[in-house]
Image (cartoon, rainbow, N blue to C red; front, side, top):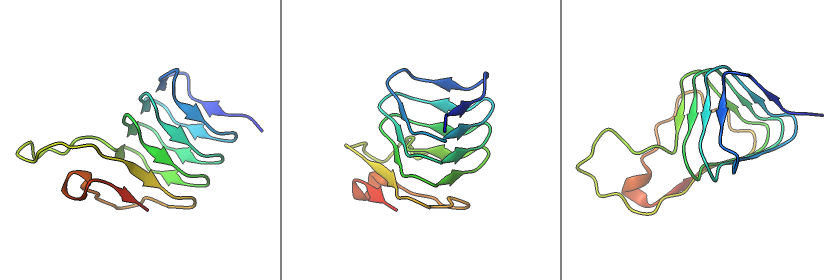
Length: 104
């Protein structure tokens, strides 16, 4: 089983991409990201620095994972976002700045 990365996707060399992962067109995967096996990331998604995504997940078109929020009045602190295995991430808003991190 191999990875399928669309030629227009941008994947940082330090990202760890599991077997069977599908990465769609115009998707951006930043550094220190881990994506578990058999996960599908649809087109135009952005997976930001340090995100951890388990196996068998589905990240839908245009999703932004582990990015700073639009509300810049919040004080940024160390954060960690982990999506556990099998998470369908259809409609989910996670504010890591309020709590210091989440695992789903």
